[in-house]
Amino acid sequence: MTTRTPPASGSPEPLRPFRQQPRRWERAQARALRGGHVCCGAGCAQGCELVWIRERTGWGWIDWTVSADGSLPQQAHRIAVFSPLATRAQRLGMRWLARRPAFRIRLGPLDVRPATAAVMVLALIAATLATLHGGVPLSITVPAAALAPLLVEHLPDVLGARAGENARTLDAGPACRYLHRLAALHAALTDAAARSDRYEVRRAVQIGHHQLFDTADLLQRRDTRSVSSELISRERLMLQLVAQTAEILTPTADDAPSACPGRAESRRAGTGPSSRHQPSAEPSTPSAPAPPMKEENNMPDHDSEQSTGGVYLLFAHEPYYPGPGAREINTSVVAADSLLHPHVRQPDGVRIHDLLTTGRRPGEIIPLATLTQELNGRVDWPKVADWEGVALDLLELAHTGRCDALRLGLPELARALLCTGPHGLVRVFDATADDVVTYGSAERAAVLDEVGVLLATVAAEQPFWPGDSLLPALGRLTGGR
Image (cartoon, rainbow, N blue to C red; front, side):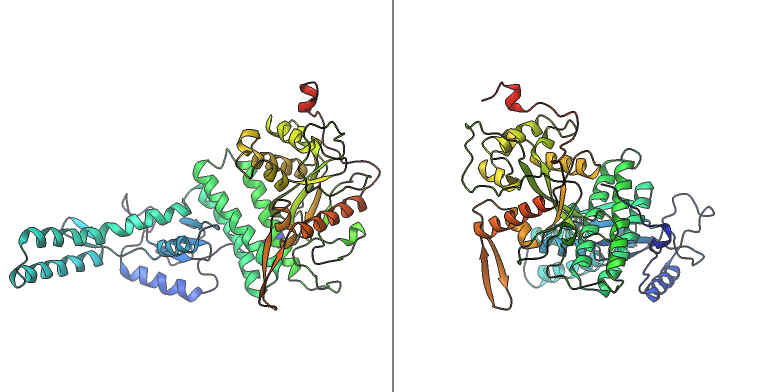
């Protein structure tokens, strides 16, 4: 796959503190300047603590340092990213974690929170009253009065550490500077989502949040130099998302309403939407000339010796945009022999290839979820292969053009059906009918039929190219079954 990076002229504006609410920064900065010492650079004593202001965002928070000259900071001091997969309770905990840091007061040699000092005074008063008028012995009141302020002082730190498990925080340094650039790109996506409620824009914001969190997690464990190539790929993806949303929000004369948001154009393949399940795709390579067939609902006979040529593997993956102006791609179809590519982790790929092709008919499209069902759900996958790693390697092969792939932008319902087994059910709430609609194997088979029709429609004069220097299949290594 060839990707294009948008020109620098289309890059979003640099990230600045409270860019949507500049008066908030002015008020917070004035309060910081009045409240105490602000570091002024080299003239300050060694060990001078920075004064910073926390800006909360929908995906985390940013800490900005305050300059003595009143100028806006050019770089964030600290960036934290919340997990996009957190539960509601975890999100509430992380929002509490993003609160403004508590002001501390000095009591002799100790720095304590104001709440701790207040609880200490109230505990002493309550202990005195309980001892003098309530008859409570000192052996109870004194420990209680001592434990109450300790609890108030240390409990927020414990809760913060627990909530911090679902957030990734980077302090000042190369990693924080890189994440600052990604945050600026993500800010452009959130601005676009504030102006539009289109599915593609909202989905771009979700993908951007995932990229921020995954990048922060990566940079917590590795330095920027060792993962520079991956960081470049992530920044290129964010640039493509920004360019994509900009094109979506720019009306053109050729724009027409889409019957199914999030799907790629099917007119290039010569097919139009025929049903609510119609999967559309942006084909990246020629496909097999023989019309592919849908999978059989029956379990394959692994002892048969049928030909396995022309079998295809369909797998869903994290959505991406192949370039500016392109629609979301969330599912790929590759030839089964691509599993034998040396750049796919082995022997995992060879084992999955054997499971995928044994007993199948030529032209079948086998979703990865079907193999999962045949392996007793996810229970038996560890005995066969690391299917997640193999899927990522296959996607990387398709990205780099080392094998042919059919890229699909499936609607949510069609993708959900293919991510379940042949006999799985998908339930969808229909707001117009105020009822739950159940989709099952018949609808799943219809989706596979349409993928097969699309695969045959875009077929050129040669079958899918699985790649070069393929390893021998497991059946050939063992002399056949």
